[in-house]
Image (tube, rainbow over all chains, first blue to last red; front, side, top):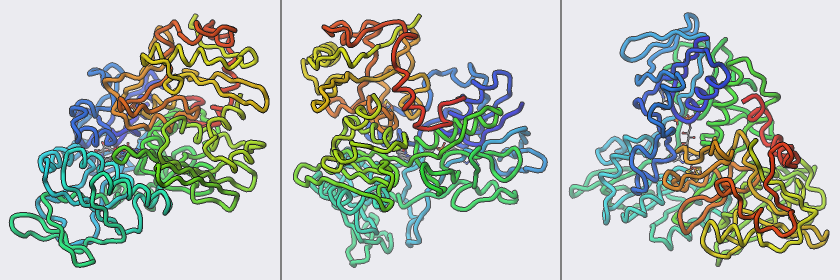
Length: 412
Length: 159
Ligand SMILES: Cc1cc2nc3c(=O)[nH]c(=O)nc-3n(C[C@H](O)[C@H](O)[C@H](O)COP(=O)(O)OP(=O)(O)OC[C@H]3O[C@@H](n4cnc5c(N)ncnc54)[C@H](O)[C@@H]3O)c2cc1C
Ligand code: SF4
């Protein structure tokens, strides 16, 4: 069997390793558009703060990891896929044929329609190349404007503050991390970041980026102009699928896959940030764009590609953990609620918050936590066990912070 | 034969000697909040449950780690955090459905049970044999694993 994987992020690498584990004889080729040393985007923030060198971002640390697993890595871009001939064309003109193809091409950042974002000094923070550019410009005392306070924006925020820049954050929505936190949590994060020295403007849109006095100047909808040496744009991403133009592969905001990670085209699978997969515990399908989903996708897709049996795939759970300058927050599943009971405790002075959501069968379906680092994983365990909380429900409604006790009490 | 921690809650009296031994050996302080094993106390039922990592074979924490900082100690079967590699991103702390990987803000890294390199202090400190370190086949981890299997049907089986 001849397996080809497009993309060498976490989804692609985990898939390649799982293919090898399940098919010791097969040929495995992984095509990486970003060099021969597969790395993790998630490690970029720590490269920015100097906590790690570039090599610290590599997904696998052993130098001969891919060789020793007979995984061939080709450092080239895929320009075209022909699913009728089962071939992949590289930008150097070479062609690679496959029996089974996995698309794990991830996502790319998108720019909002704001004039001036093509100027020198405006960067995304998505690739290692972006990170090198940011390191050059985000020096101590420089003025930096961060557009977008979503999950990725907030992760970079911590690194930028740690670099000692004068930071202004511009977010169009009314709070920080609007897709990961509700109003209470998002506002607490904002208060925290302001206390840590960031200037945070929510409900504010950037309207243009111009040049003035040898610097950039970001105009916002209030009319204010913020000077900047560097503008970092983190306003969202889209699936990387341009090279699939001309194929019959169906997509919406991501490549559509079934519960076996197959696309609608024979022998073509998709996984990770480029794929719209089943969400845990709902009839919904979504592009999660998070690391745990990417690795889970990569693993299950590969088992399916080798004809292995995974049992019924019940979808991946959306979950995030975020550290904004020392304040740790996490979100799990359907934290917006599904019409069952909900409970929360708020301690604004001490920056602690916990919210739980149950469904009508007394199962936990979602949670938000702020200011807590111990045993948060139990929330995932409780949600994915799909068990009614029994007597623990009343206890959790009284004190939602007892999640770890509930987990141990129910499972032991 | 690899050994693993066998926990028998029925024998636990809640004395927390295990927590003290763990925190002292690993963090240099007698401080239960720094312990990698935790005794849950269900006073209404008069029940005490020592609780720590089961070193599961396809470990979620290991798979989620973006920088390969959690690796298998082939000698003990433990999943071990390599401090020099860990960037402190905390993804493992939400990926582990048992909640047994925890972030330590003082070091900016995560901590989890590593079986003390093959001679766990908690088992040595336990006066009632509620925690023993015995041949893996005999341990009662099945119950915990049953729960875990539910975490992502498909993700573990067959992989
Ligand atoms: C700064 C930053 C911080 C993040 N922090 C977190 C976090 O804390 N927690 C979390 O859960 N997630 C985080 N993420 C998101 C996480 O990194 C992604 O969800 C994850 O990388 C997705 O993995 P993937 O393999 O699907 O895609 P990617 O990692 O994007 O990998 C895709 C690969 O495909 C290659 N590729 C694309 N097109 C082609 C082509 N035409 N030819 C050849 N190769 C191609 C790319 O070069 C890349 O190697 C962060 C992302 C960023 C940028
Ligand atoms: S906190 Fe450390 S060990 Fe855990 S996933 Fe992140 S880098 Fe890996």
